[in-house]
Amino acid sequence: MRAARTRSPAVVLGALLLGAVATTAGCRPTGRADDPADVVYAASLTAAMEKTLGPGFQDSTGRGFRGVARGSTAGAHQIRDGLLEADVYVTADPGTLGGLGRADPGWAIAFATGELSLGYRPGGRFSAALDSAARGLVPWWKVAERPGFRFGRTDPALDPKGYRTVWMLRLAERHYGTPGLADRLIGGPRQVFPEDQLAARVQTGELDAGVFYLSEARAQGLSVLRLPPAISFGDPACDSVYRTMTYRAPDGTVHRGGAIVYAATVPGGAGDPAVGRAFIAFLLSRRGREGLEERGYATIGVVMGDRAKVPAELLATVGSREAPEAGDTTGAAPATCPVSP
Image 1 (cartoon, rainbow, N blue to C red):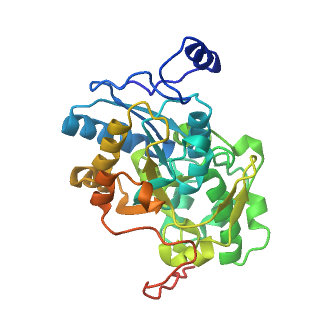
Image 2 (image 1 turned 30 degrees about the vertical axis):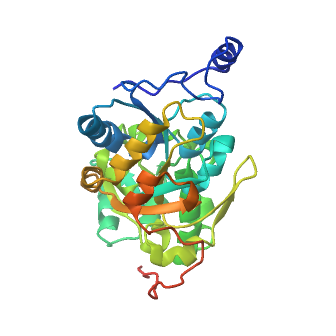
């Protein structure tokens, strides 16, 4: 499958000077019925998109799939700046939707949830110790503090997993009652890698472990150490704990913690909004849900943002479900965040 098309600023300017019919940066000048869906998606979804969802969409609709993986923040900014064309934007954190700028349509559909985990290479230097930690025999953070342990993460400025990793370590410090743990494990720039490179660094042994979404680690063939719900960002019952975490991005945007949710929207100015809507409808379809579940995701169908702006065909698919405001538990059964050692 071909990668979604990228355009340099010079090409964008040239198109405008030539009177291209697209009036919004990032639009295709035409939306022919045989054009593929251009999908900019969170890099943690690469295996699911390229091996399952993209082919499934093409088989179900006859339309092609052309995807590009990015950290969700970086992807939103590149769409905003006209450097990426997107009929669909898929994010690992709905908080990045504002990064689309004028291309933010004001709505999204949350279609899956996830959780943070540690991923490590089977047979690696510390794999036996991490296997023991995964079975609850030793604390994982004590393994990570051993001399020579090389830990990897992604950039908080480019990828929601990057700031969630920092949040996870801050919560772990509190959860395990170990003052200074986060600062000891959060290293400098040398432990930060692009989202689409982190798994390869672990697989080759350059890193001993990294923080991944659970489904992502499994898709990459890594051994997995699951984290307690209180720090994994994977249990809505722990939202009150997750919401104590915030991150201010370099552009001033403030992201607040919450359970991990994947969401999709059709950016304003998309070259072919119809194929964008069709792709999101596929994600919500039975075949789309089955594909996600086979990849280890829990599936949902929830409206986010302005319900009045959601395309009618997608609104009919998700029905009356919509996301509550942060902190709103009206009508919800009491839930307690599980506590584990």
